Image 1 (tube, rainbow, N blue to C red):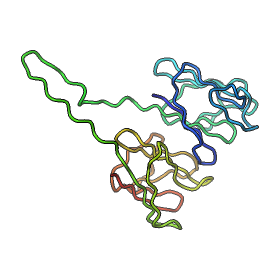
Image 2 (cartoon, rainbow, N blue to C red):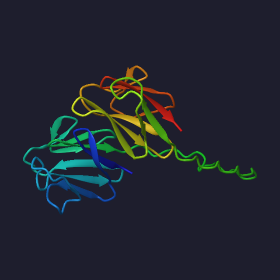
Image 3 (cartoon, one colour):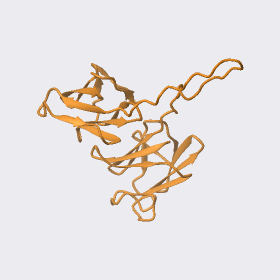
Image 4 (cartoon, rainbow, N blue to C red):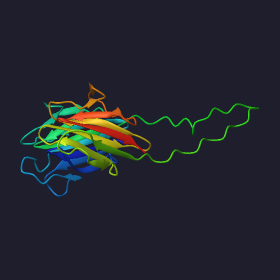
Length: 208
């Protein structure tokens, strides 16, 4: 299911699943997503979902609507795109459906049906700070979205999925580095023992 992660200054304030055809965003209380900030117009933008396609339309806002830093009037959204309204950022997430092989089986006549594999238990994860001022601190990833880094400098998010975690860039010129290499625009799956470098600190991701 596509969803929006709303943040300001690197701090996630709400996560909104897109469950209806039109989802309006603005300062007025009758919007589906209300952002009470003077830089956001009363009726600022609308997200329109048609099947698997989601488009954002600017509704003639005073300060404009931006997608990945560019002013738009209408724009189709891809997984990982960032929509900006004033100082607020809305990260659009729409991962491809998981292929549940344990639930999809080819049954042929005369061949016994294999038993379905048991569902995996939900994953749990922790981020340990290895270097920097907060060395030794541990953050247990209990929320759907956890942000790490330094607001205004470099911020990343770790999103909890059903059986895994993914790392994504949220804001800042500096991209998070995963095991020494900068990540791209798309979220990257995390593995046990992965090292994340961001905003002058190094962290270790521990699964389980």
